[in-house]
Amino acid sequence: MMGKTPWAALALAVLALGLAAPAQGKDLHQAMKEMAADIKAQHQAAGRSNKTPPTQSLGSTKTVSFILPMKAGQGRDSVSQDCLGYTLRCTAVVRGPHNIYSGKVATSEGGKVEFTGKKDGQPLEMTLPTAFWGGTTFSLFMRAQREPFPERAEVALTCSY
Image (tube, rainbow, N blue to C red; front, side, top):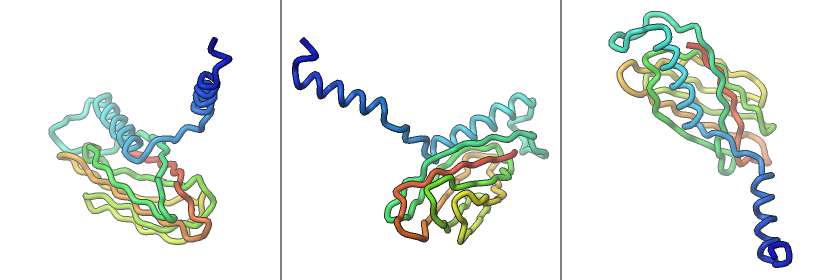
């Protein structure tokens, strides 16, 4: 009988812990893939051409959240996504953990924002150009300035395009 064996009890305990464990959240790659998919869907819905760069924004906004893994209070990641040449006007907010952060956000198309002394919860405004032909590489480096250094940071990114 299942309830009488120690292995069954252990298996049930492991299953219960797995179901109760908090979700890890999306990483930067998943978040930007979601953003790029929305840009493409809005682009198609607007009946825009895939042969010429956009001349005006789509009038759309999307928010994605992601987790940036950090080691000794430092994290970095980069991802390439096709955003069809739209300029992303974004606001990023570190939701936690509580700390003061510095770092840099950049795109392969020349967008670059460096920041220092940003407390969690403080917005960071940025304009990120993207490529029309092919993918744009988005790079993020972030460092916590105070101990205890976090092992990860949760970031909310809201972009208009």
